[in-house]
Length: 207
Ligand SMILES: [Mg+2]
Image (cartoon, rainbow, N blue to C red; front, side, top):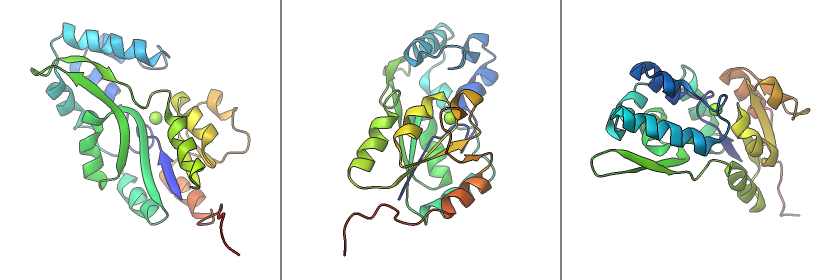
């Protein structure tokens, strides 16, 4: 089994929200809820950061202040006994690498910044945005049973392509797209839902 989960909103709070609060820059408060086009959103963020001369090390320092949710460590430790954990996120590797080390060195697949030698952010290498479904589909194609966990619009494709979707505090517009998927509101309920699954429900070889 592979447990493919989103990061922010499930295992930790939203990093950009924290950065907006820390910097006090109003223009950084815009999220995917205000600008659903992620490329445009990131172009906006990059230009605001440059305007205020905020460089990558400044951002990374702020991102490192974001703590995991209280139950995150215990949940991940338990989940690892059930299968491989893949954290598939639209965040940036530079923001979340530290978090991943803190919670126990799991696999993180995220985007990456393009940075000048002096730390100025020039742009992004968006590897995950709009491609979450390719990761889950590929894992399924080679025979893995993939539990998908998502909390927002950018997780819809992951939830639709995985073997067993679990909705984590999703907004109504997402929930209505998944009639049969379990809905959970905390990590304990998520654990109970995964616990109830058979270990290898899609065995495809044997007598
Ligand atoms: Mg999320």
